[in-house]
Image (cartoon, rainbow, N blue to C red; front, side, top):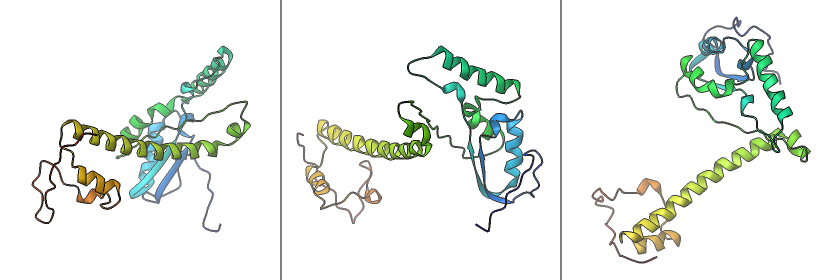
Length: 205
C-alpha cells in the first residue's frame, strides 16, 4: 500500500490540523490515560464535519470464570489495581458512553463485545476473529427472531380479537401478495382510494 503513512506522536499533542480526518480509530488507548476525556476532546477537533470515531476499550472487571477460581480473580484484580496505580483505568469500557458524550460527541452508540477463552478449545483462544463472526451472526439471528415473534403475536392477537383477515394472511403466506412495509396502512386510518379495504373475516387459528 502506498497511501498509508505511519506517525508516532503524543495523543495530547498531535501534529495535525483541525478537520483533518474523516474517521478516527482508537483501540485500547484510553484505558492507559489519566485524562481520557481530554484525549477524546482533542481527537474530536481533528474530525471533519460529519466525521466519525470508533473507540474500542476493555473492561477487565467484567471477567468471569468457570469453574470459579480465587487465584484467577486475584490476578485480574491485580491487573486492575496496578493499572489504576499507573494512572490508567482497566474498567473504562463501561464508562465509554458518558465519556463520549462529555467530550462533545453526538449520536453515541455502545455495542458490547464478548471475548471467550477455553483451554480445551485452542481454536477459540487463538481465534478472536471467530468471536467477531459469532457476534455478527447472533445480531442477524436476533433480528430474524424478533421479526418472527412479532408476526406470530400479530396472528394470535388478531385471532383472539376476531379481526384477522384470513384471505390476506393466506395471500401473504402463499406468496401471492408479498410483504412490503411501504404499503402497510394503519388500522386506525381510512384506507387510501387506490387501496380497497379488505373485508374482516373472523377465523379461529
